Image (cartoon, rainbow, N blue to C red):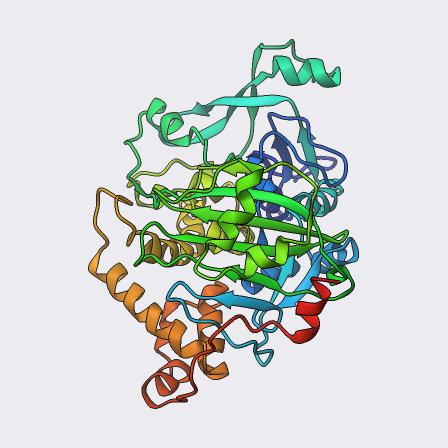
Length: 481
């Protein structure tokens, strides 16, 4: 290399500044200078934003995601906890009624610990950590409207400065409002979420349409934020979940999620014909009408802090980008742009973190600019997507009208076996550990067929199932003090 001429560091563009985009930027920063292109102005601190309407509802990060957080960004989980989040033993700190109407015993013998907080807090800490990296630049108030390049290689994106956003913050980013410009990069990552235009962008380049599948149980969500009742804020009060039963349509369920600052997020859900509404006077009554009234009973003494917020954007929708035969170099799609799941399973954030780890691992073995690397990225990131997809669809496809395509034999078989595994895990810590390995996305579904599950399933234990929610006397009293 001639004296004074340094090797050029590759460049990457990430479309979207939500959790998936930020984790992707963190992974890519090891190999490239990264620009995150975001259409909205991002808030300072834990505050809601226009581009993440789902943030209002209950969220948690499974232990598989917690591990991925710290592998990707060491110390991140401690930072989130220091800001008010909780690490919870998924069964010891959870009072849960399964979809087949069985109450789980509260075990703490397993290693699984989830991360629980508001989505606003989670996003804020991740945003501060990733955007604090000098190798990552944020470009706000710009909307990506298309890809540059051709069917063989993507070379960048076309962006338009947002009129409303630019006026609101007094920025023009060097481009007049509404005007288009081109940003070039060695790799473009689409992390723009459920509304991604990647299928159209690819066909505009001459590539075939991507295969898609949708399984929509017709779930509607209603969420309200409460001040924690009684003295529950002084305890590590457990999460409380009453899960919907797919065998009984309409399915209805709900969850209480104690979060930072002495608050509870309460999310109620119902499928077609049994949806909750935005009527605040009907919220507690809906909770009391679930398969068990425990959630309604607990919020009777709680003070509402917000109105009721609703959503119907809950369908499982997958795009099989990894199956496109001739994938262009320089382009990868991640997160909800690939697959969005019914939020009841809580897998979206975990998949985002695991997909970012897959990006990092591929790029540690292959140069970012090498032919075929983008295809390897797309295939590698499909693995965590598939794990979460199979679990969600195995349950939701059982609801009437969920899909024009009936469940596959594999999906039906897995759903039946999962039902048996849940019933076994409710009585056996050994079996529960295997079940949680799969539900937390730490291990593949084949873990359910291990001796840890099969021996208790076939030979015991034969303890009776619980007759009601396993709240302690102290917890019950705290809710009414």
